[in-house]
Amino acid sequence: MPLNVNGYNNTFSAFVEFANANGAGDGKAIARFAVTETMQLGVARKIVAADPQVDRVGKSRDLDQKRLNDSVRTSFRNAIRDMFGGESKIPANVKKAMLLKDFDEGKPLTARRILAVKAAIDNHLSAVPDTIEVNVRGRTVTFGKAYYERMVEAMPEDARPRGIEGRGELAAILRGTFSARIEQGLTVLADVREGNGAEHPASAANVADVSLALHAIAIMHGEGFINGAFSVADPKGRLAKWLDTSNELYLRRSSHLEAYQGMTVDGRRNVMRGIDVAEGRNGLLGGMKTVHFGTIPDLHSTTGDGCGPQRRLFFKCESHGIYYNPFFNHSRAAGKTPGMRERTSRNGDLIESLKHGFSFLETRGADPTAGGARKEHMTANVKEALNRAVAELKAAGRGDLAAILSGNNAKKGGAKMVLDNVMKAHAADPDNPLIQRIVNDIVQTIVSEHNGKHGDSIARLGNEVMIEDSDIAALV
Image: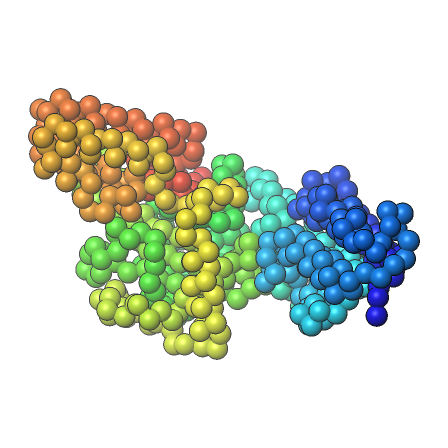
């Protein structure tokens, strides 16, 4: 049956009204909803103009109903998908209102359905405050919506305030939750640092609170992030050893710290670990569901004088755990510390592991700084300085020094490994003016690259956020 143009226009008008109403002037992600030519006048006018059976003033004539339905339905679905950053991230109440099964079956998109979805999104967004301010031991820390929006979504329906009128109540709930959890996380960090970690079980809840405390410290220094990693000063390995006592822990494969995995730390093979955390008010920030951690070892050649970068903890929250990995078995036993109790498998581990794999593939080749991410990848300038130095040494007939400089998987080891290699190369020929200049060039590149960023520049791998002992001590 042919679709009436006027009926279609009513539907499309609701679509445009929906988009504009949600994106009006606030600069939020919703503003992307349908404010392009394609989604405003584009879809309707281009279809009408391209069809000889329909005149320019929009009088009712036969249209290809399937083509029309597909265009509008696909545009609408894509707009909502893009708004939330992917179909898997669309809130449950919005998915329910969309009736995605109808989309998949090719049913027409009606104005009623569009307005129902609009109401669901209004309900989802309006109660969630744009920011919350939390007092952290006398300092105000401001968290943006991206940190806690998924937490709110995971809250039980009967415990979650709704609508604009519930915004203040929800903000108070979040503020109270964050305040208590950050306080607990700082207490755990301070006690572990002083050697009193046994007072606190390394439960998933306490680990999540430590994560929240680290984020609070990062925000205090103007370096807040959702995606990325922390490098936490852990000179005596106390934080790593505390985490190893967790009953929630499992050893896992990782593409991070590849140059440091396999080194000997505390008498065992350096293997990465994971602790999964349930979503909700007591979960991780930014919709993350697992804590991924491991030791960044002390490289002795840079610390022989007692002034170099000491041992640190790599601590990264990720969207999916990876309990199952068919490529990880050989180093599991060698990575266990005495008394470690790896958790057993549970429902959902396989699905999460598969999702982790897909997520990993999606990020290959992506810009590691996109969206303000703070990842440990070696920066382009440091990599360029390394490549230039290796080329100069080879051109000067010093392939032996070039091999030292690029050894130990330097590019995967980050700036810290490059510095270690530079010092080894210098020790091999300390009077060589070329290597002396290279040492100066690389050190200056690393320091200037991270000028203005918090923390120990020469202990960095890349662009991760540094948490120093002094940061924790300042809040005790």
